[in-house]
Length: 190
Image 1 (cartoon, one colour):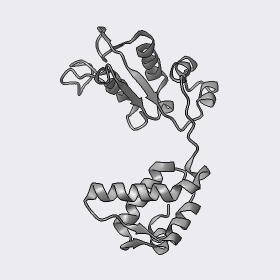
Image 2 (tube, rainbow, N blue to C red; image 1 turned 90 degrees about the vertical axis):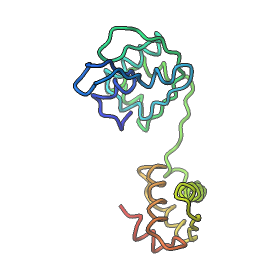
Image 3 (spheres, rainbow, N blue to C red; image 1 turned 135 degrees about the vertical axis):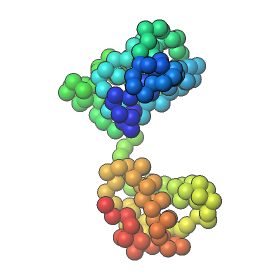
Image 4 (cartoon, rainbow, N blue to C red; image 1 turned 90 degrees about the horizontal axis):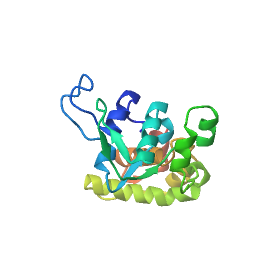
């Protein structure tokens, strides 16, 4: 949700009808309609505007949505999985997240600690990402030296898993045949 500009999030989630706004040149189903009978994943739900939160809440309570520019209800039956890097209790207290939506979404909470709190996972994640990246590019998997891995374990991972994946990809592209401590110092800095 964070990657979509706030003015487009409602169109993305609920769809729109032709003429609803300047670039709406045809009817378009939203993510809720597309996920009907299945699951929709709302990433970074804590960044959603209060207006969009109200519409998501309505969709969950009433099992229906309205496309932007329409007053016609469309039945939807979706399971929602949501993720955020924000403390939603704090966001609620500061008026940036709807408490009623929080209680709708918080059926099962899984707290994943930040990467900085689980540095012992970094070697396994490096291995996983280097294999995945090699498969994506159709190349041989690069090895990381023990010193390179140790240095990466000491890094401050404010961007968590996404940042680690990007750094691993950068090191694979720019590093030597075996990614070294020197490669990490050269290419993994902020």
